[in-house]
Image (tube, rainbow, N blue to C red; front, side, top):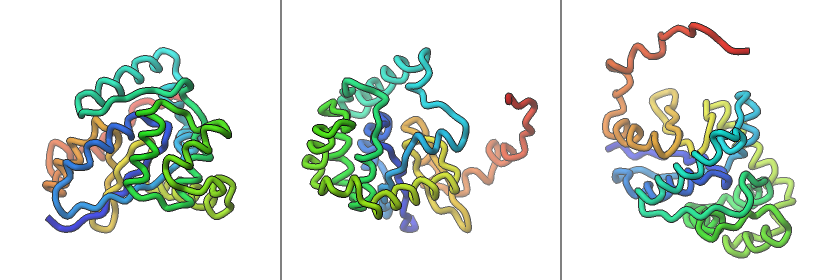
Length: 213
């Protein structure tokens, strides 16, 4: 297949991103994954959404589903004592260091394998040590700007949730969201004309019948 670079947009708050990391080995040869830290809260605010853990009736279901999907893919998911938590400073570390996939795996291991939330001074310091990034980057202006730029670009490209996989397609791109969208992504990588044929082709033309305000 033609070599491709896929942007893996993640936030450390997402257990599904942790599970998705375990599936990257399913990509065909020629695919390069570029990890891109983004701030999920800002994405939610832009699109006028609430996170699944912010909806009381959905919260426990979401936690159970992430643990279940993890087990399906050989990943033990252990939640930190607080969730959702603020991932902002930890994400700044990742953005400021332009963290590679190995570092991203260590970061998610800290949160969802060890079950630690990097939202206190002590735990943020522990996180920085675990991933091998200088703690000072959490307050670095360039790191802050990098995280903002990543998030703004993700929004501009139509990312509405995490994890999202953004794949170049001709003059544009395709966005695949979540662990449950991974199989569709694999099918599209096998044939990137997939959505130009029925039963997909007409979906852009489906009218909005009613909108809630």
